[in-house]
Image 1: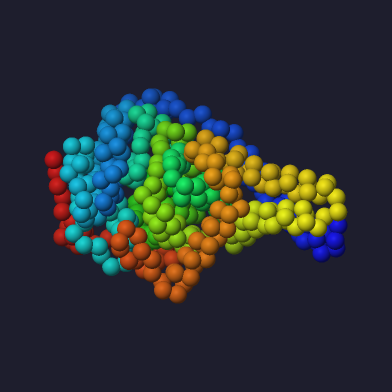
Image 2: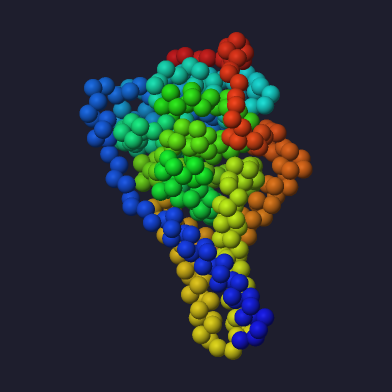
Length: 407
């Protein structure tokens, strides 16, 4: 084999070795058996406030709220916190919810979803708070199981990863995002270890807090300007309270993130990627970039080997190496979402697309300092989740800035 190809191949194998060894280290977890046994031993089920922030969610809201209203749990309320929908979201929601709050105007410095959750919290009565998205669907037993886990393990925040529904071709990048999030977090075992301060991950589709923990960290006002509030919350809870717990939902909850259009998916990921790097430890960013480089360069090395290698053995080795890399993704994604075969077929291309999105996100937020989501322009606070202080909320402002609609 030519000298230059030998040198490139050695560098490539070092990168691949780092990727594979790290993946094996963070993904050797035993599946946890979830149940509601602890909850059954309690004399009363704790009251849960379920807060659903919305903005033009007419396509999703009935399915979500029907599932929430069908929960096998005796002591809960559902609060819809709407950001000023111009479709019929509120009309569709009213038969299913206990209260509706409507945002009259968005205060300066707030991201819409964060403010929606905040004003929902301010009328919530529960000692446990569930913030969940309008594109989620919940099985009847889900709340019992996750509340039971929250209380049994004495944790402040339980964040669960819903099974991801994928239907359109542009959704094939969704598994890539979560695959790399797994690498940047250090894996479930480290996330759930109170001593591993640099391992954290939050999924905004399902955030289950004790009210005590939520108040201790300052709630949504603490991260009001964050465009990636789930990750910011996870970091704060892990470092301040050491009581973060992360689980897959094993289909107890499902979600369908960006089904509307390619543009919807693109802007959804672009707004969060650079913000996420601001909260991620440098060593984890290196491991994410190393994984990207290993996967993106695989087809290039395959072509170069096929053209210039003097032995077919090298071509077989390179092919097996690429299959090993692809198998790490298949192993990670198993039972977490639909196996969208386009993702496997175009694995390196999708990784390249992810890197392009990250670069676009970086350029947008570094130079313009603004991003757009659901028709609103924001100037995110990229340090939200990093700072150690926060201000208490202004009750009088809240009272004059929302409309409460009770059934």
